[in-house]
Image (cartoon, rainbow, N blue to C red):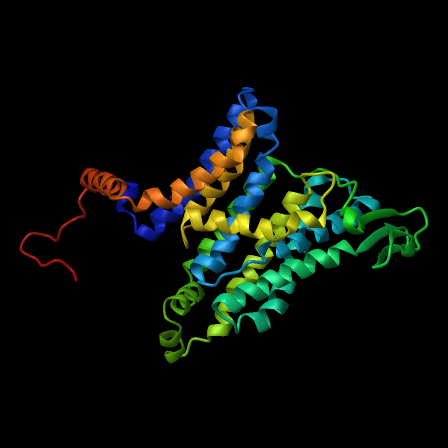
Length: 362
């Protein structure tokens, strides 16, 4: 049975997974043949992190219909929690990089999910600009808290301080988070394969939620809040569900991102980072998971591709963003796209008709 004979929902899911798997195979082969530059190769893990972030934010912005500007805050919670977990496990003798990453990602996702749930309890009662402002404020609060946070580990366990590293009171310990200097001495254990695995998990969680009964309730709230309330849907509950799941997935992506560098600082997870992730979602299409994957990967790679013309790099980047937003609304583009769709429908086999002398099913 051809893909065109499948239900639109199933076909969309298969295409989304195929994009990720084909990209992984193609990039791995190109890298093995030495056709990918060193700078571009170094962007593979961040690409996976940004794809996961874009897909998870699409659950809030596209599927739930709420504007969140604090996604980088949840990313930072996961990143710094993962660094602390990995540092503690390494200190106590665990050397397997896979075990370190999996445990760090799980704890980082759980921490970000709990914070997202606690923040979402009051925030999800707001709508529109008010919700955007509060989530923006949350992201900035997290960044400033991390700027004054000092965490170390020694044989006695974890030590915390909000004054300076000397106040940790450690004996021959290791500083894991050093205030505004961020997390230092991180073991770089993130790999492209782990990144692709996280992307597939993120896509699976989001798609399964979207296609479930809860997902349909979330989209019903997005489409018409009053009508959803009138048939007994708990609006706050389902909005909070989407927000919490997206926060947890952002935390896991933050762990992947942090474990790719030897040092990460709180200033990396500022308002601009949240806006960048939102740009990926908007350009990929609200509620369009495969679009978020493509746009996040393309727009992460684009600045590196344009690096040889560094003087005009960001100018061209801005022009590409404008074109991506404007071109789909041009009548010439719409006619060409519709012509292609008609051609594909014409080439696809016709659905089976009812038996002779009988009537088609309703």
